[in-house]
Length: 182
Image 1 (cartoon, rainbow, N blue to C red):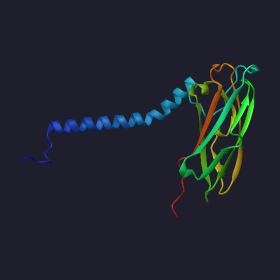
Image 2 (image 1 turned 90 degrees about the vertical axis):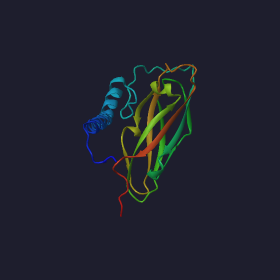
Image 3 (image 1 turned 90 degrees about the horizontal axis):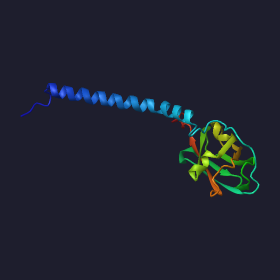
């Protein structure tokens, strides 16, 4: 019969290897977030928290684009979030402003952050937000309603076969602001 409490040298070596692997995985996971942020900063990918810059502001009057808006909130947030216009039609290079309305339906102050995405995905490269509520966290008091603008330009270099873009916003509750037990 084998004693389960016997520590053979091979069992200790295996245990040490497992411990090293677990620590390495933890370290990698911990370093992944700042590493990802740095890569996004250097490449300009997924930079949702600051305004874009325009390199060319000429309007292409010979072409019309449509941007449709889709809004979502995570269920735990307790907010309603809607675009004031379902879509807008304009020329590439033209400055556009639209507004969204958000309402805190809960009985507590809540802080949320909106994250944008685009369909088709390649449109994100040409979609330049100059002002957006998504750049900062939004704290709403119980029952508060707020109108929030987005100012953007779609660069005229957008491929000609793209005529409709959907701008999706999803609001998430900011970690650390969840309701307290009581």
